[in-house]
Every structure is written in structure tokens, then in C-alpha cells.
Image (cartoon, rainbow, N blue to C red; front, side, top):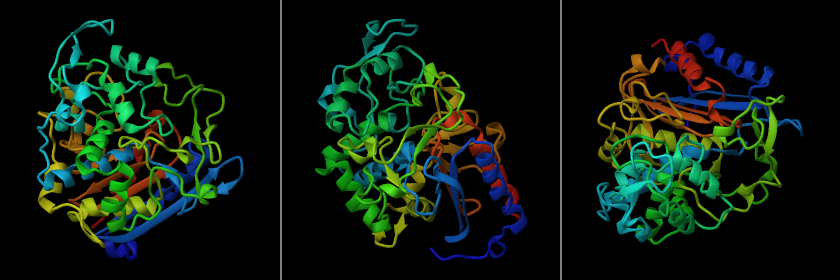
Length: 413
């Protein structure tokens, strides 16, 4: 990616500099250990900044080549893989997942108002589209509700060091759905299940498919399901302001230390990966993810060849819900606002900027990760933004809304 002066791409440099001050403030206030941001417009890099530390304990700076857990920012990558196979005519979004994973046959769903996991009724198997849009009836252990509690008790979270993707998918399928597919919205492990579908349909592991079909053509040389050998010194530590498990949002309690160390190089499950989580398993650099974001913004092209057609990408990044998330969502965790926000294949889509209460444009496509990473593309402004930090959970601070406001405040032409 070539660099351009901000003023030559419609930015006010003084206003753009507010982003650095904002990032410094998060570090000074011990909200984030460190962070980095990369902004592109029209395919050119216009701004990069990094501040703070990737390891507070070892006083290592948060640099451009820092490796970070991107968690749920893996979901758009898996969704692209799914759409690549659909372009090849192997299946459609309306295909039931049971055609690939037999454990999803003869599904049950919780009855409305259920208080026990055994209060169920027969259900159809979710379609691939429902899995991709979080309308499948699946859940996450950190959500409220009966199914989430059962997942928590059985530790079904597609952790990188817990068995294999095939085994975990079958474990998830053994539980009932939270609701009849297509009737509600709940953030879920559905895209992890799609990762398994990609494996079965392609005959490759998800890691192999990503590397050969997406990462290599895009030049994403430092992204994968495992910290690269010899790169542990660049792998950022993970922090949380909570007591206990940073992912256990139902039992979340603020602690005395706003930056409590919870994972680090040399002791991380991301160094011994056996399960390729399409919903949250990738580790990578900010430059690598910008290559992916720019591929989405530019219509599917990569230096090593086309990933998807412009038409397929436009379809993928449209709203696939009947309305916004709020209109069909039950109380659950989400990486984005629900009001005025729809959902495409693997990412959120702005429908009505005013209702999101965040400066944005209709059609903005975005998602974030549990460690507070975030990306979005704005095809109206021709902008791609990637933000990295390592603090879980991502709901700790309103950094995403603040960052979008700062970006919009810096664009003057």
C-alpha cells in the first residue's frame, strides 16, 4: 500500500492528530495497555499511530508489527471463505448445515420461556445463512439464557487448545437451539460451525484454506491460527479490568486492577493451537488485516488474484435481516450497536446512521474482536480503518463509537 499525505486525501491533519491524543488518553488512564491504528483512503495509507505497550510487565512498546489476538474479527474471514465456495457452486446459503454435519439432524429448540435445557420442541436445522447472520438459534457461553448457561457448564467456546473443530462442532450440535432458526438474533458460535463447513466442502483444514486461498493471495504473511515460531516476543499480552475469566461476562466483576494480565507469550493457548476457530481463532498484525479490509472495500481484488467478485461482496455486505438487529434481537452480547444496525454475512451493516447514534454512513461494514480490536470499511467515503489493542472484554469502554466520531471529524473533503 502506498502512502499519501492526509491533506491530499481529504483529511485535516490537525483534526486527524486528535486520534493520537485520544489513544494516549486511553493508555494514560490505564484503560488500554497500548494500541495501534491504520487508516486508508482510496487505497492509500493516510495515517498510522501506535502508543503504549504490548507488554506492560516487560515494558515492550506496542509497535506496528505487534501480533494480536483478533478474536471475532476472524468471522469476516471465515465468511469470505464461505462465499468463495458458494461462488464455485458447491452449495447455497439456504443449504441446511445438517447436509454437512450430521449431528445437526433432528434438532431441538428451547420452547419460549424455557427455564431448563430439557424444555424443548422439534426444530429444523439452521441454514448456512442463519449461522452466518446469528439467527440460527445457537449462542455463546457469555450470553444470558438457558442455552448459554449449558454451554458455559460444558465449556463449549471453540478454544484454540481444546480438541478439534470437528469435535467441538458436534458438541455444540448436541445442545438444543435457543429459539427456532430465523425468528430472533443472538450472537453465537454459528460462524465457528461455518468454519467446519468450509473444511468439509473444500477438503482442507480451515488453516490450510485460509492460507492458500485468502492469506497468500493477499500477502497476509503474519496471520494464522497460531503465533508464528520465533515471533513470541512480538505477541501482545492480553489484559482485563475484570476479576476472574475475562470471557465470563455473566459473572463479570470489576477488579482493583484495570489492566490485569490474563494471557501472555510463553503461556498462551494461541501457541499450541489444535482447534481452528473460524469465529475467533486468528492472530495477526494490523498491516495484514488492513490488506483484508482493503480487499473488501475495493471489491474483492488482491495482489495475488481475485478473492471474490464485486457482486458477491456487495451481496455479502448487505443486510440479511428483515430489519435491524434490535427488531429481532434478544438481550445478548454484540460487538456493535443493535439500533439502526443490520447484519450481513459475517459482519454488521449500518442501515440508519442516526439510530446507531454513531457517525457513519449507510452500508458501513464492520466487526470487532473480544480484545477490543475493531475494523470498518466505508464505501461512501472510500475509507478502511483497523484498530488494534488487547483488552477483554470489548464492552469495557465506548472506544469504537469514539473512534468513528474522531475519524468523521477529521474528513473535510
